[in-house]
Length: 197
Image 1 (tube, rainbow, N blue to C red):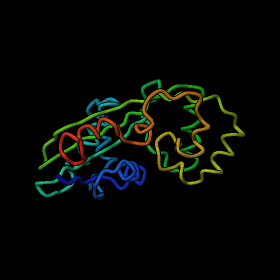
Image 2 (image 1 turned 135 degrees about the vertical axis):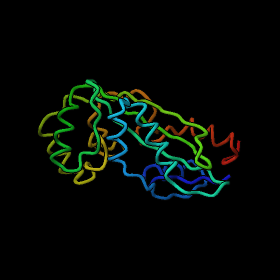
Image 3 (image 1 turned 90 degrees about the vertical axis):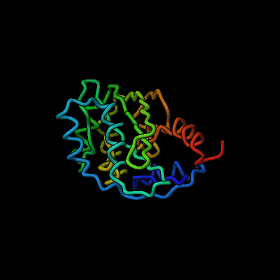
């Protein structure tokens, strides 16, 4: 059984590579902004949205019959229920980080496996992230150090980089923070013969 990752995320690709999973990666031809808007309008919450976006990505990829397609997505949910997307600019990143300062939020990482257009498996792992009450000086230094990298992830941080300094506590899987519920996914891939059991 072959595996196709419907994502160009370098972090997700790296996770699968270092875990020894054989796969190929392709872009998912899905208009994510429209998909998210539609899911929000339909009343989806942040956790369910992560899983549904992962499924939509996987189903958007044309693949041979002997291929599993893996879709993945992640949503950030503030304590007040607001869902944050990628900030898109440094000013937007600053606003997001200020809105998260001194509070908890949740990251939901969803993954779905599809074959022949049919969903076979799905999983969401949620992580509680506690942001410290950082100073404005730290925020300015952080944004200057990280540059445009902060614009590409919800919450404007990468815990694998200087973003780790934003937090006082993290409860949950490190892999889920990076964008994949990796251990449940590996268990499913073993069942399906993609990796050795």
